[in-house]
Image 1 (cartoon, rainbow, N blue to C red):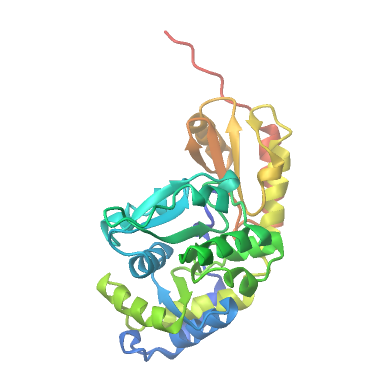
Image 2: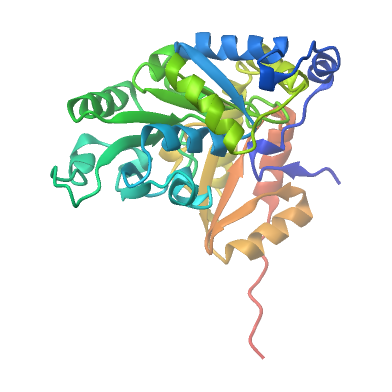
Length: 347
């Protein structure tokens, strides 16, 4: 029986052509900034985002941490959505390593607004910590792959400038967000000071993220990356995968989005699932269940669909390069025929 793994878009695997690019990659020592392939990737990333410079990092978590370490700093506060990735999934590194305090801000669909941000500004008194930074997530993982609209990005940017705050975008899936909103990447990134994006999620590379920003910032970021243990040597073999991904795997993200919407529509037709179709903007979907999520997850796995419980009564599914149009058709057929396991009677 074929398995369709919808747990995350991190499950993508490099295809034959990407592996070939990795095999033939020209390499050097990146700690000396002498790896030609990593240098090419960083130049590409800077050009795509419209920033002056870029730096390859092993993970998006490290990229976010470096930005927080440099632009927020010890004893200061960063305003972030209450369900942001840096708040829930980065092991409190904001406080533990960067020394900054993340402040949870409300926002519908994961979107920060000046009205909510304003509530968390502090008076300029020496015994109070200062808000130095705003962090946004686009698309927003925990809120179901939701995206910032152009006017929302502009509003956050203007608020930050008015209050002398830096803005960092966790753009792990920003190419998905761009596909969903039709906002060009360069335009999207123009509203933030720094940005990270992931190569190993929807873009299909095996490892790595990119941190982009001003030249002076990236120069310091290289130092902090080394301090965190992220200095690498002949990393061009990984950079080659990233270059291939940027050149070939952005367009298929639109199909991932269509696949997710098709699965969501099918889920809306069955009695054991409840989903708001308007919330499915990109390749991530969450739905509520009629029974305990872990029971349904286990039963779906037996039918060939691998997914994960997001809470006691909700499930997350994520489409990606590894899920084809044909796979999506099969997934929908399984969902239509699926019967929820009956509740066990108490003895």
